[in-house]
Length: 513
Image (cartoon, rainbow, N blue to C red; front, side, top):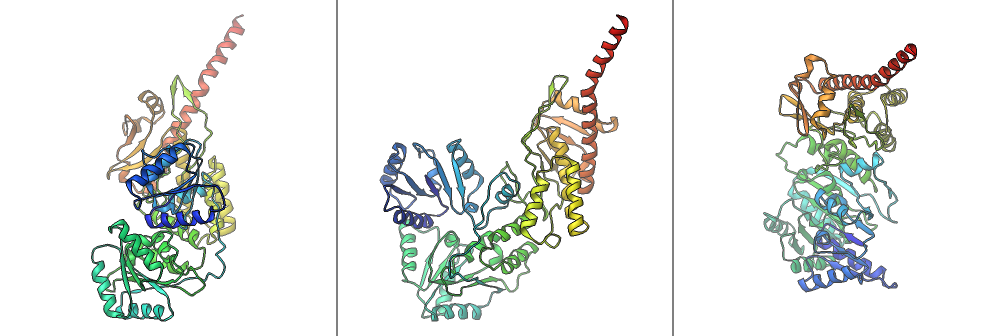
């Protein structure tokens, strides 16, 4: 088994926890991170290759080419949202039958979508540990008096404080200001650019009570468990992502004492709409176990990313939700000897707002089920039935939900025709990406109206629809659905033609006989 964590400090914590819990059993646990010397790392890798080591805890070093496992059966990924696509692809490449358990309080939009659509299984742990209390969250303009008061109040009750800054640059100046405001406080500084031994010493010392305030970067974001820290102050909170802020807030309140999280933004700065939504969401979802609701909100703010591509969020350039249909069973159609390729999914990257608004369907569990039903619909008839069901329960569909169904209609017909992605190409055109060869496209193009055939230009890997990008996004969707429907109808008719001709020929032979 391998346990993968994003930071060196967190791997240290997991290592000591596993050593303690597995002590009564004949299980060997190893640690692989930058705190280990070259000789220690070499010895650990040798023991992994021979099977002498049962469990290894480490950072992404354990995904390196030099690390070989004799028989890896389980990979546990802690703080999954901190890992990128490259690391996740390396996990897939380790072994074809590897079981992977990912842990996250705030899954990234794409991971959450995979659970909604049924591609991944998801379990929710919503019961907090005994005696935990919700964290009091304050969003306010930057103010030195507020900072002084918050730190002093925490120190007066015998606690410790995290003071988080977005960058390493200027961290010494921030520390000097805090010393000036609270002269009695013992301060320590921690960030990822420090020497490994120095960083470990500082964090362990702070955990032991050697300092009252730790001025740090987001290095404390992942998994640190220091029960005496019950106040966190985050400077320039607008520069952090929603998941980051939630994780940082989760570093406090890990005992039965009321904890406080202060999110500061520059008083003279006008926040962007996205930043305002992030801060508002964090203040709104302050109850214990609200990570799932925050992840859903994050998905609506940022989009869901690409199921098979490199982007884990974003997908469209506006706030919205673009579903990916996972219909694995589709027969390969052959027309006149030319094969239309099978694609697992069609990705729509047009600038369209397509999601279920919270004010239309406020219950997150029902919304999750609603997304799942749309994602698994196999026909337009099913989509219409789902839409009618929503109207009966929740009232008329809002525009974004209507466009969600339109996107799904386009996905269904585009997938049947072998198009894997539809995206803008500059300001003028729209591209339909496809693995089909030129002969197969020529077959499809025959069924387009004459006046449209010159607008569709094939080149290896894509078909460019010239001029379509100048239309509004909704018109682009409807036009593509109409044109691809015409292609599909022509293919269906052509498929029936050979059998019809055969029947006619047989009838003629019977009459002649």
